[in-house]
Image (cartoon, rainbow, N blue to C red; front, side, top):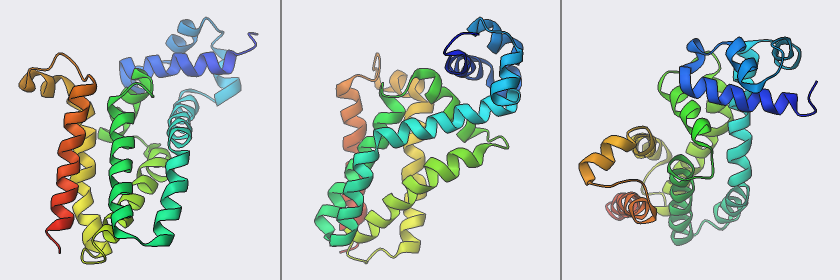
Length: 211
């Protein structure tokens, strides 16, 4: 048995799930790609459903690691209740989430599995929702409320953040279409900054319209 068999199987699973989705991927293909006996999947993960759940947990852990410092900053800003700092923090969260979806910090296979699960949820969607999407969303909602000095109520902030949040998923899941219409070859730094500026303008407009 290889020393890192569990990790190698998980990496292989990401490739297969990204390529074929949960339904199309097979434990045999995952094992063959990793060059490990198929029985190891049952041993480590309990089967295909188990290794898929492990892959989703892995995404949650990777994002938490990337945004750990941001979460600490958030706690400080919320305690201070300073509207200007809350607005800056909201933009930081927007940048962090957009960078994770459109940048290189997460592997291409991770992002593909994440977006696939988001657009066509399986029984394990709660892993992403409870562990990643909802906590991120709630923080951005709270920051919007603070940024407006309470002129945007918490309930309205939840409503406003639905389409705002969804746009960031679209920027990643519809990357090829956006590049085609914008005549972009790819999402380089200049293009990603343009997307960020667009999101920042929405934040400013939304907050300033409630003065």
